[in-house]
Amino acid sequence: IFCPTGAISIRHNREAVWEALADPDVRVVAQVAPAVRVAVGSAFGLPKGKSVMGKIVNVLHRIGFDEVYDTTFSADMTIMEESAEFLNRLKTGEKLPLLTSCCPAWVKFVGDQFPEYKEHVSTCRSPQGMMSAVTKEWFRDPANNPEGKKTVMVSFMPCTAKKMEAKRSNSFTHGEQDTDYVITTTELIDMIRMTGIEFAELEPESSDIPFGFGSGGGVIFGVTGGVTEAVIRRLVPGHDKETLEAIAECGVRDGGFIREFSIPYEGIDLNICVVSGLANARAVMEQVKSGEKNYHLIEVMACRRGCIMGGGQPRLAGDRTKAARTEGIYRADNVAVIKKSDENPMIMSLYEGFLKGKEHELLHNHEFCSS
Ligand code: SF4
Image (cartoon, rainbow, N blue to C red; front, side, top):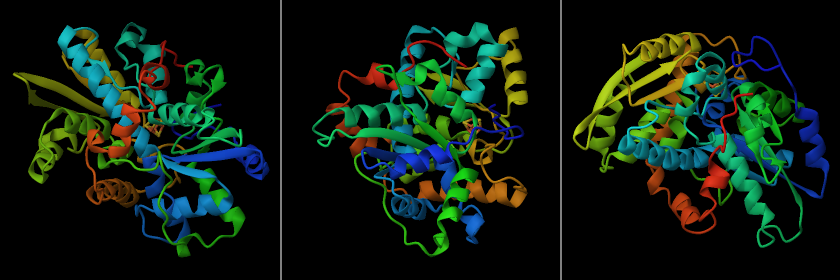
């Protein structure tokens, strides 16, 4: 059973992951979503909302993961693809508004409740889907896997809906499931406790190359509005501090679960709506359907405030914790050296080399599938 809020649960994959880690013929690869890093530390006595990505990388290496990658990297790929798709739809005027596709609970909701808008959902795979598809493909190449090891992909995610996404028919490449196991944040905390490792004492480590380096635009996927803000960063030419501040203040970070704003772009005003919470999404979609509202882009996250409040995150989060997690994500963006996806040199070299000609196959869904 899958539930984005975590009220009902859960398919545990921990035992299968321990078994894979013990198998010398298997390469076990982790990816860690943006929202996870701001929700683990407080379980080990560290300040609420503090990003502990470096410590998570360290502990996963100690546990036995061969590679630890950062889902912010594949969030950057999502932005590259989704921005291109958005520009294309603006040019043709078709299938607008573009509906975001990162949140599987929202995609399922569209399929069930607003099937006439299925074609509007972005064809982009989620960051989890892109990372797993690209990683598996990378290690299919004997040059990157001379020992011929089997690759097992484990993703650390803030919700149980990601477990559902991993099993969808469009989460397979060459007939193989891209993400083998999904571990929620609370399950990760349990795994760390089982090892007896003093998490709080660990030194931070950097993620592994080539998929361990994401931009600030990738990090902010963890909060509502983050996908949209990263898309705007990609579309707007400037990358100086003033431009980034102006984007942050355009309305995308305003409080509230429904945010509406416009930004000028090449002679038109782009009307954008950022929604979190499915009840709010329903209200917005009813207005779109009736013609009362017209948007070019609608971002929806099923969890109110976005993935930082996913059902797989530690529960009992009061207002201070919610605010601290949001601040933790924006702080991680503030300290990121690269702010825009298209300025991530690892992304650009991947596009110019390994990914060339494979973008459609590895980064997009070839059919709408919500279950
Ligand atoms: Fe999962 Fe994030 Fe969607 Fe919540 S908003 S269901 S955490 S993907």
